[in-house]
Amino acid sequence: MGTPERKLPALTPETTAFWTGGKDGQLLIQQCGTCGRYQHPPQPLCPSCRTETMAPTPVSGRGKVKTFTVNHQQWLPSQAPTFVFAAIELPEQDELYVFSNVLAPPEAVHSGLPVTVCFEQQEDVWVPLFKPETGNA
Image 1 (tube, rainbow, N blue to C red):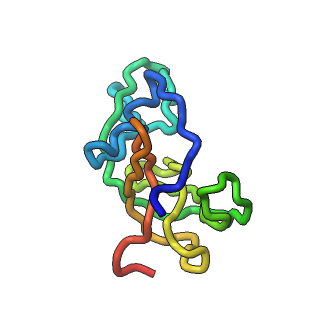
Image 2: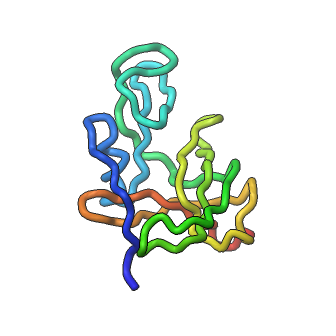
């Protein structure tokens, strides 16, 4: 069947690393070079110290489902009508979230589910998606 069609993001100076880090198997999240705070989505200034020292930094690629919703609307012809969209909390910092799909049946997803990143390439974008960690339910 192939990869489902997705609406791809515009690549900007702040977001390019996030959307292309999957080429090297890395989830890249901005981190402040001054105070060390992570920030997502990417922005030009640190939300804590207001410096312009933000730089993409590899993170573990692991996280836990904080909350999620199950979509039942088929938005594109090649897309399955039912999928899970979740807020994934990354362990590198409290309340550091990536919003993405969880590649699992809806009934298998729950808050607290440990997940790991995987990437789906479309054109010059590597979309970060998450799947349950092997051996965890």
